[in-house]
Image (cartoon, rainbow, N blue to C red):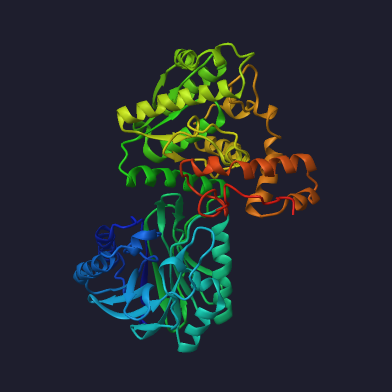
Amino acid sequence: MATVLRIVLAQLNTLAGDVEGNAHKVAEAARQARASYNADIVVYPELTLCGYPAEDLLLRPSLDVRIKQALALLKTVEGVDLVLGMPWRCQQRGLMNQAVVLRQGEVVARYSKHHLPNYQVFDEKRYFAQGEDAVCFSCKGVQIGLTICEDVWFPDAVAALKSLGAQLVLNLSASPFHQHKQAARHKTLQARCRETGLPVVYVNQVGGQDDLVFDGGSFVINGDGTLAATAPSHEACLLEAVFDPALGAFAAGPRAKPKPACAQLYDSLVLGVRDYVGKNGFGGVILGLSGGIDSALTLAIAVDALGAEHVEAVMMPFHYTSSLSRELAKEQASLLGIKYREVPICALYDACLLTLGEEFQTAAGPDVAEENIQARCRGLLLMALSNRQGQLVLTTGNKSEMAVGYATLYGDMVGGFAALKDVYKTSVIELSRWRNTLSRAIPEQVIARPPSAELSPGQLDADSLPPYEVLDAILQLYIEESLSAEQIVERGYDRDRVYKTVRQVDSSEYKRRQSPIGTRVTPCGFGRDRRYPITHGWNPGA
């Protein structure tokens, strides 16, 4: 039988800054790969040793020492080559984003990333110097080229490896999730394979890191562009790929079942909550449960992420809270088996008005000031319970609301993590329906009823906002596609409505800057992606 090359893709969930802990994960994955698959090579994601993105931890003076200590720890791994992502400081060039090949604990090849992304959530030019040389190494007589993440999104790096005599290419990635990203990865890598005829092994990180979530989904593509093996998404795992040098191709391997778009989005939100809570050491979460769809979906995500025993919900009724809202909140809490309590805010609200004095007691009638007091009373109670019980408060607002400022500073925006921060209202509805296809987690009436903050008698979101299907379409054109107001009007939307919406987006930047972080799932989240000045005179029409 001809000699084959056994490559194992180690799709790991690392922790930024935990260099020693990440090195132990690398070593353990290598031992498992050797024992289970008789691996010749184990390939890891980009910057595995320091985690991605490590941000300004990369500037800490002790980084170099920690990386060298981790490499010393990995000398204990024998009998298999490790292709590992890590930062490395070169004496003449500075800090480089590298892929290194470790053989019996010794570095036998180094490759520095060529294309350093500096857009959306990426700031790599802040930290790294650009690599220039193409690098191959040999294992069992096979010439193997090295690339890192962004390198394969351009033709030059893979073409250079082809000219060096590479027979296959390894790509170490830390590619964060957003909707439809996996299809874009497949399409891009297939183009590189067809251009050069070289197979590519793509290894992606998995796990939540602050507002980013990495979905994994590692895969192997042959030179004709066909998928040979795929790893499941949203979980750490090992994937075996067997390369036959005589054929210049990988044998058919395991193929994870593709997930529908709703499943990919929902699993990313669950993973984002799970890792933010777990990696930061919180014992559980608490949230306000209103009987509305946003808090209902947030609750379902929290329970799926952490287990019912680590989730608590609080209904905080007021005079305008309908009996239906109270019933639906209690029903969902029972469905999911969580701890649940009701804490009315009436007395606290009255005390606030009394403390504020005559200006509030003699007002002609409640307006936005009184509405916001209600929201802030609820925020005060949630934070008090959080402090007493050691739970993280999950906020429940969605991207549509945050875009136009339909949220109360220090009220419903209070919390440590916003599970739906990058999820439009129309997607909230779609996800809620989809989640109920797995098991009943959200009462149907919650999904069907008209959205309302219930801060005044008979209040509906539609009193202040366009229908969400219209609002979200305008928002996506303005935020994700960066169209001007006039360009959006040309798409057929009402001029007054468009201009009002984009003005609301621009004027609410100060609120968003004070909001908690949340899992990014679109190509343009509110955070690293979109860095607009709070104070400006920009005309959104042009």
